[in-house]
View 1 (cartoon, rainbow, N blue to C red):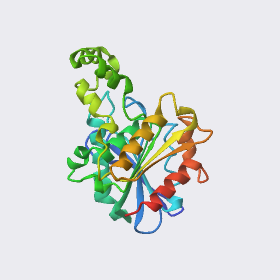
View 2: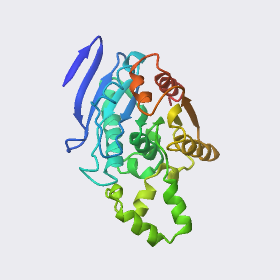
View 3: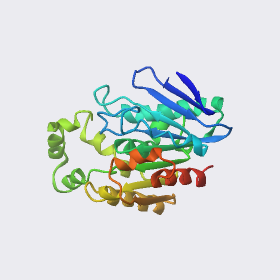
View 4: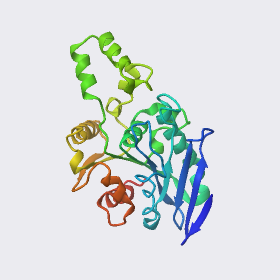
Length: 273
């Protein structure tokens, strides 16, 4: 469905694939040559939706700032095992890149923004070359990545591998119902973005709510990624959002005066190709 409101075009449930979850909503501002934010919701890869209470308003403030916003659904663990979720984000990027010029946007100005497990997905698609390569693209198709509120590796699993045989850790991993979506321990370890830091990454911005800095260790893992990224010649920064919790950080982004929204808006502005 397409709706025009005060010069802004809103299109809902655009199909970027054949599965019912492979849908996105697109909010378009007036004008030509505008950038686009591609937003990916959270939910531990097992739940969440672009229209739910936590994420349904995320795109509202962007068109007034001259930025299009695509809010993306993707297959959940109940629909398909890993790496379907990352593959869907890459497929959505490819669809938007192929179609945004028809709506006035600039295909070279695509920015990934994700929250919680969506933050993990955008960080991975922006760093691990394999997902966009399967769409005939590379990470240069992404002008920047904003990751909000996700750890970037499993410290307990990494520590276990230092002190126990791989086969023993693999067996314990296989017994956990939380890991059923992953085919193996190695696939699980490989899905963490920290393993894919390299030269040639797009610019990264990590936003960490004040109350989620340590439990889980979002701030420490984000800073480590940013430090390694900068050491490899990339641009990466970490900002803490005062007086915000994991969920209030994203719920407030629909407000033009919100700190997180302003940081994303400014990141888009200063990192345009």
